[in-house]
Length: 160
Ligand SMILES: Cc1cc2nc3c(=O)[nH]c(=O)nc-3n(C[C@H](O)[C@H](O)[C@H](O)COP(=O)(O)O)c2cc1C
Image (tube, rainbow, N blue to C red):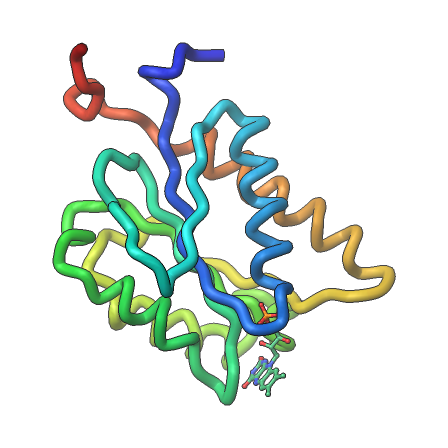
């Protein structure tokens, strides 16, 4: 486990209407923290500083075949230009993952708006009932994977 100063810093930005995306993000955060990362979670509708993160994760549910406007607005920000970004959508079609044409379209729309450098894209199912437990494990694994693959460049570590 690294010291606070060399921990990988991950920012997760999201929006939700029904709460599923918030629950999914809680699991991703748990996975990333257990993988040794420092994680901040922010609502896309609020003020967000994107400074000093090694990875930004942006997630949106799909409504009427579109990601939420607040998340698209965040991704359009000029100051994301030099950031590494992971994108995900939450939707009914999510269970089919990357193989699904609709999910590909949703992710393409997020990516089209994004000024940063996209390094991951994925989708999660709006799972309920018995699928919820599996969804939780998939999200925790995703968070752990993110923590394991982001590297904190030495120049990003501020000296005291
Ligand atoms: C009114 C409405 C429209 C939706 N439209 C889509 C859609 O176009 N494509 C899709 O895959 N899922 C669609 N969904 C499913 C949502 O994306 C899914 O329920 C998601 O988990 C909602 O996330 P949230 O609870 O974080 O708001 C829709 C759900 C609702 C209630």
